[in-house]
Image (cartoon, rainbow, N blue to C red):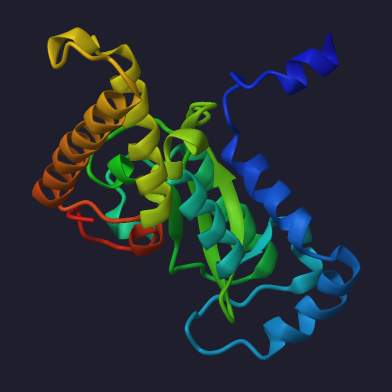
Length: 232
C-alpha cells in the first residue's frame, strides 16, 4: 500500500522535496560538504549575512542554479521578499529570529520561491523562504502553504521552450482533428483530407495560442523565473 501511494501521480507535489531530490540527483554530497565552507568564506559582498557554517543544516543550502532548475520545471518565480504579496507566517518569522540568535547576526536580503500569482495576489501555494549566503548560495529557512498540484510540472512543460510548445500544439491539433467529423468538410474522408484538416487545425490552434501569448505578455519559463515584471 505504501509503495502504491508513493507511485500515485496525483499526490500533491511538495516543493521542498522536489528541490532536495533535484539537488541529490546532481550533487555529490561528500564533495559538496567538504567544499561549501571554503566557498562561503570567499563569498562576494552581495550579502551582509554572516552565518556560522557549523550551525547550518547543509541539506538546506542551495545554489542559484539548483533553484533556477526547479523554477523552470514548475514555472515558479524566485524574487526578493519585497515583491511577495502574501503573508509571511509567524513560524517563518520565529525561524528567522532563531537563526539570528544562533548566528549572532541580522539577516536580510530574503528571497521567496513561489508561483507567479503569489507575487500579485494573496494565495497559498507552497512558498519557500530563503536567505542569501553569498556566492549565489541560499539557505532555506521555511516552507508553508499547500503543496503544488501533482500535475503542475506536466502542465508547465509546454512553457519550457519553443520546441515543447510546438510539440504540444501538434498533439492538441491532432486530437482535435481526430474528433472532428470529416463529413462537415468533404465527401471523401481519405488520408489526404485528414492531413489537410490537420494542417488547418494546427494553424488555427497556433494562431490562438500566439495571439493570447502576445496579448497577455507571456514568455517561456527560463525567461521569467527571476523576473519581477507581470508581463512575462
